[in-house]
Image 1 (cartoon, rainbow, N blue to C red):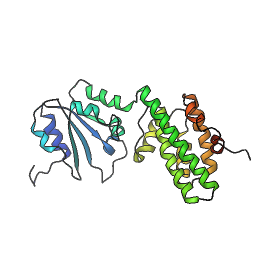
Image 2: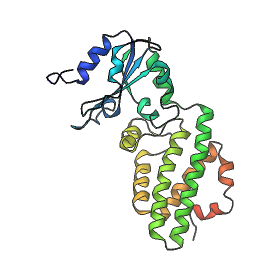
Image 3: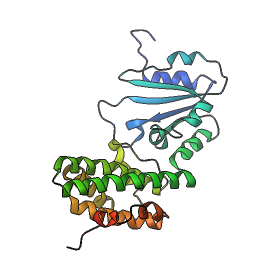
Image 4: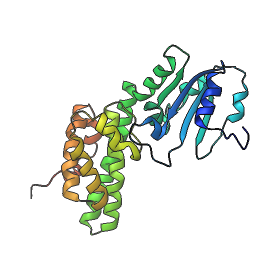
Length: 247
């Protein structure tokens, strides 16, 4: 492109659609999330090429401006993107702009949006243990008068809690930016979205120990129902400190 004709999203899409080597275009980020676009939003676009294809569009690999970010990959690379990885949620909620594979690009995105049963169970077990660990440390630090440490551990525990709850539903956790957006459209089964978000907000900000314990009781019940009792039972008598107190 010349200085008079910068590479815009619309112009690049026209170039890509005209190139038979391109089998898919996938838009991710805020422009793939209805209502999340701001004046600062760029276009984050995956350009999916047929394996072993030859095209001049590879010269745009790594292109990054305030208007347009491009990721140019082969179909094989696209299948593997975010599996696992930080990019998984972005692709799980991405929007198909071009699909020359008779729905194949859309199916790849759908696969990224749904964790396999074994993968989800294993991930949930790990996140449950991490959540319990941070919760336990927060409660212990509060008991010892270590206010800052207690709040920091409480905030850490909320990260692990969200990872756990989404894994239990076999979904990648959304980025913080899209948490409210995601839950408003796709609530977690068995959880009141507003109550959960209020609890996460308060615990992260204040380390409220009573609320932490009440929340842990709900998580414990859900985790046991999902088959993760062994992870919890490994905590032994320490569970009593983590649960709501009767005195």
